Image 1 (cartoon, each protein chain N blue to C red):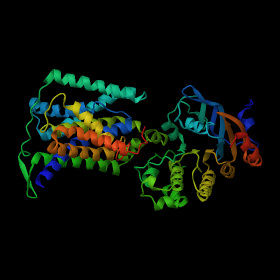
Image 2: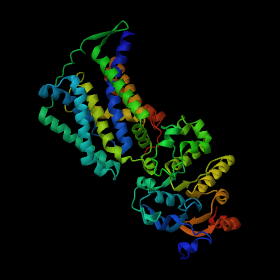
Image 3: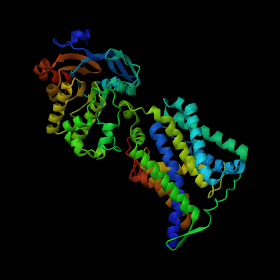
Image 4: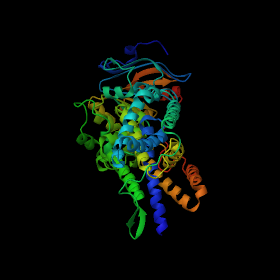
Amino acid sequence: MGSFIQYTLQGLASGGFYALAALGLAVIFGVLGVVNFSHGSMYMLGAVGTVVALDEFGLSFWASLIVVPLVLFVFGVLLERGLVRWLLKLDPLYNFLLTFGVTLVIVDLVKRRYGSSGMPYDTPAGLRGQIALGGLELPTYQVFAALLSVLVCVAVWVILVKTRVGMIVRAATEEPDRSRALGVNVAMWVTPVFGFGIALAGLAGVLAAPTRSVTADMGTNFIIILFAVVVIGGLGSIFGAVAAGFIVGLVEAFGQAYAPAYAQVLIFVLMAGVLLVKPTGLFGSGEHS
Amino acid sequence: MPETTLSEQLPAGQTGTPVLEVSDLSAWYGEAQALRNVSLEVRVGEVVTLVGRNGAGKSTTLRSVMGLHRHISGNIRLDGQDITSRTAERRARAGIGWVPDDRGIYASLTVMENLTLPPVVDRDAAWSLERIFEHFPVLHTRRNFPGTKLSGGEQQMLAMARPLRMGAKMLLVDEASEGLAPVIVTQIGDIIREIKKSGVSVLLVEQNVNFASTVADRHYLLAEGEVVESLGNDEFQSRLEELLHHLGM
């Protein structure tokens, strides 16, 4: 029972990284129609940024939780304004290729500056060791990461459900053209939504820094799993992205515990299974083109 | 199609101010031409239908006027202003209301959110929520339901109420009666007459010619992307059999 809860917690913690990043990927795809291949590199920048913030600026983990996503928000805004926007009227494949190119450039620049080897980052003081919960000793940082991810996802959900901005984002995510035909100013929200999506990937990276090996390539594997998450959840479904993020995290954690050699394969088996049973994903309507 | 001017195409007695003027509208899907020099006019408070068989170009005309189909040539004017180059969003803000054939109801939004999502573009013309609920009481009852949990008829009412809430002056309605039970079609007809009474103009794409003849003032008959005939409702009703045969409907 104890190890079951531990694997569940571990799954929720890494699922939280996927959920946060997939949430960003889903809102960007919904509002802009862009499959952002650079999302993995933004996650990596979040993690590398956290290490660099400490090493070069003495910024604590707690400060990085705020500052790094904010910096990535600005970076996302510049990326959208400077590059992505100009290709929005063309076939979505162009922006897919553009963001793929951006990934290559970012990864190489990070390698050039910080090398290819892992950058160590200690678990922040106060989140080290174990915490006693219901008679079980659980890693404090994993509890924190899982809780914070859930909290951020809930906060984003509240914004999406309770505010006018959220209503517009939900409508634009479901049917961007129809929203325009109803006079909704979707264009006004394109830049902030892109920045916000990137910031979420960055936040996932900050949270991952103390638990994962921080390298320039850490986003490469991440983006592949992230695409699986989005496909499982249903392309264009915000709720689906979050739910599938946590599901994939759990599959990965239990896979690593009981069949480590197949931990990642299981994710893609799950994806194939979902596609066979429900080609639009668990929560996708299939109407978004 | 015989060469006629717009005024020649209009039946006698229709001399109101045009809200929507479409001139020489042609549209393409890739290489295939879907519309050929379509010209039409809708006046203040008029209900005008586009009638024709499947593939005649009715929905393409509507989508082109809304700005959703951009591979076009020709000229579109709203209240005398050229809106041909404007985006769909700017056309909506200028007062064109869109009621798509699939109703266009958002699954992730409640009925109330579906109603309040579009901006109010004309405060004087916009229907208040009270007025909307007075005319569509079922929307009030189900205001907190997800939009797609409504029945087909209720979704059609929501789709028509939405542009009225915006204050649209020109409604583009695609297949209002499609797939609805006869009793609901009668209700939709009453709503269109109510909309007309409030001075809002309606351009309605309709395959159900019997329904079209109960709500419209005038009709444009489309075949193979061209307007083949324009006639008033009296003439339309008297020649219904002949027209149905001619259009192959």
